[in-house]
Amino acid sequence: MNKNIAVIRGDGIGPEIVNEALKVLDKAARLYGHTFTYTDVDMGGCAIDKYGDPLPESELKKCLESDSVLLGAVGGDKWNNVPGDKRPEKGLLRLRAGMGVYSNNRPAKIWRQLASASPLKPSIVEKGIDFIIVRELIGGIYFGEHKTSGDTATDVMAYSESEIERIGRIGFETARKRNKRLCSVEKSNVLDTSRLWKKVMIRLSEQYPDVELSHMLVDNCAMQIVKNPAQFDVIVTENMFGDILSDEASMITGSIGMIPSSSLGDTTVGLYEPIHGSAPDIAGLNIANPIGTILSAAMMLKYSFDMSDESDAIEKAVYDVLEEGYRCADIMPSDADTCTMVGCSEMGQLILDKLGGPSI
Ligand code: IPM
Ligand code: MG
Image (cartoon, rainbow, N blue to C red; front, top):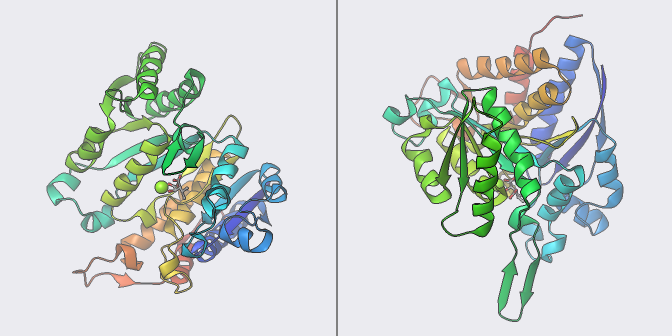
């Protein structure tokens, strides 16, 4: 198969981690007889420096014309003082909205080999951590009006029933393919948007009698994720709650550097990115963990290109490399002499070397 992938390296560690993912994609293409062509797209701080705009229309167009987008990370202190609507992150938000990718899927799964990297007690980790956060991605407070007037600032949070319903459906469908437990997370004791959210979820649940729906307030959910993460199968929530809870969920699995994500709308053209940021403090030092990006590329193969074997082979290669004790700095246990610390490019190369498949 031929696929055209738009590649956004972005800022900070973005270029380093994306380069490793591209090497892995190239090898998967070779092994399985595909051709991947890459179109470079400027977005984020680098685009501000080049064009004065974090995502010029011409760059967005390249993404919309691609079969899917692979993104490293954007942002950095250098652009902290540019106005809100010109910040690097604004490029990312425009990209998500422009692509219509309302459903962001963030797995929180602990790798057996990384159990000791979790900050949770072993007795909690042993019960298992394997759930998915389905985050609404192009609505809510991120996309409401932002205004500062005099000494007062306002950010508007709005949701319509149809926006809730389409992400709710993804939540139910995701749960249906797993252990059939969906937890809808909101703040319905305070917010109108949350009361609407809950009402729509209850209505939708009539169409999914095989899925057990529960409701949880977001503050309680933040607590339950560290107290008893094994209780969760799929969590569905609005944009900002999902942003916060997914950082928390990633941390209990050992490191945010390991977690990939997919963002999809009504077509197969998706946006794939690790959930971590651009980490400018370690940029260019070859110590970033490329696994979140490599696994994001694997998700792209599975969810956008229907290449499950290829995707599974990449995940297996990551598993094997971890099994052999190789670790980047973020997942290096302080007490383990059985592990070897490697840099970003070495980790990429190790995964590449392990990647097997039906040579053609
Ligand atoms: C994420 C990030 C982004 C978000 C930022 C960079 C705008 O934190 O993908 O979780 O808040 O969505
Ligand atoms: Mg975030």
